[in-house]
Length: 325
Image: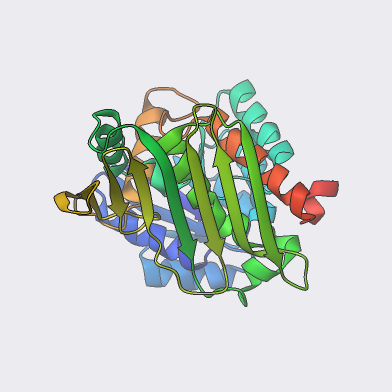
């Protein structure tokens, strides 16, 4: 039985717990929080065997095979570093780190010590990603020229969004998904990035507009908002038609339209537990193969995304305390 421990006991940790219980050969083994009472409550309500009142205790447990880090962005680096230095494989929730400097640091530790590390950007691991890639590659809509991707929720009052000391803002919480979608669809050979944002009084970004230009003339126009509900759609446009995805965050279907707007085909995603199971299984497979990263989200791609987000925040004047360490 492959035993998973979770650092953090918030909402996303609960979703991971439900995922683990739905997987075969995987055990929701241990959870750690800053207060033992909170860890015990989470363990009791989510079916975990062990509860720890410190993150270090969980990382010291010899039975833990993988640690899922589900704390705020600003704490990812110190928590991941601690786990890696204790020899524990890590799956770290997105955004990977608060900035690219931190990403380089933990990737360096992972590779130096030979300990597995991956970013839990679940869209990279979904099998439906391959269906979309195949449609593009096989010319279902002709040569691609443009994509648009939108993601937003009315979450601007959440602490994780509004507080710069937590690595807040729409970019690291929501924009990271549309950026990853563009890179998965069009690649990372970007020739120019232009953008703008609307900021909160606390200095974090609340609404982002990002345009990626590619050397071959393709363009990706991306929107993220923490201020309002949003259609969450992604559209990939080609010379002979276009593909509409119902949810860029976790697409369940892809509608293919001809150039004259006639629906010609629909592809559906396979049934899921939560969608998180694919990243967990990818980690298990890589760890058992003795790898330090997974092909679905290699270290180089996590770093590339962090570097893009650093450049955007620099342009916008969005600064985190972590940036000055």
